[in-house]
Image 1 (tube, rainbow, N blue to C red):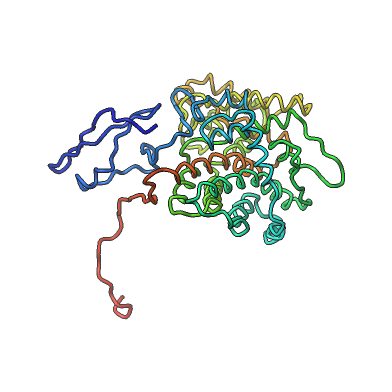
Image 2 (image 1 turned 60 degrees about the vertical axis):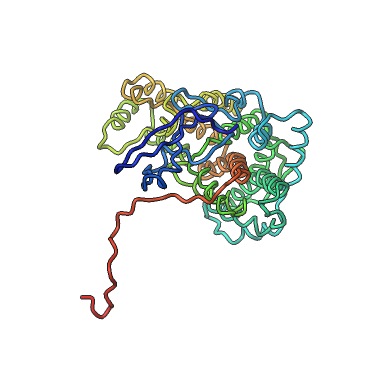
Length: 433
């Protein structure tokens, strides 16, 4: 549904007045439509980092940060993580409704048709140094996919958009696993279509030709849940990057590569790695009071990683699911004494009881436990953000598809406040002292 008019807002400047429509969506706060502001008053709005600006209309994901709510197409994230598979959630994000059994089976079959990579891509990997970061490899290879799959790049054709979306969702686990294998010097493992999406990813990551590898159902379900929890998160930095790149008419492979590049930033996709580093620096539970004191000291430069969120001002709804998943994974692996988990639990307890953190609404977020889970599963920290990209590709391509299909879609073009030198005349080089 389109937003509905719910009133008007009046802005007066320099003796002129503009009346702006106020719009409301299905959920969330009302927004003032400022598109006529420049034409009527001759001014733009100034909103660094777009923290209070709605740059698009979307029907995919809704977040209420004050209440700790995350909905995908109206479904709460906890219900999806506990009662659905990643493939069901992928179908939901792409198509707007949960699939029937027949639709789900057909969707999975379509994905499995595209898990293999063009064989020449094997040679593409050889162009990277062996010690290259897996995210560098992933970003480069995904961007290059358009050179290997240029037969369906007409973004004006719905069928070609669909095929590109299927290819990206299907091939990302293969690319991610191969990036890991390449940096480790291990042979590439081809996908198996008898396995589920999460099982296949784990198989391609850890199987070796020299011995059989059996995927644990518990670990596969944990991985599936991790993918669901990271599938989409509204208009975050990487999603906005995908939309902005897509608004130019760039092909979907280039757009997703742009999203991967944005995700690579430590303030975005690298947060769970930062949590592990923080816990390692704390060392033991006895050191927590000193660490907390440093966090409270604004001059110390010490930050509490894995707590708080740009959007959530309450408990991150994904964090509770991740915490339960963490215990399931450690139990499956027989890890009964994990100092880092004990340290995390104690730090969480202290932070949730400390008035300093409570008053600032610094609650655990999804990254607080995910790093511990991935480390226990044998996934190196350099692969954490790569795994994030595998999951988020579903959200990115869904957001890209929605944007392309939006009537009247235009190229993105943010404005600025110019604070440089005023107009001045050029002095010839020979006359400059």
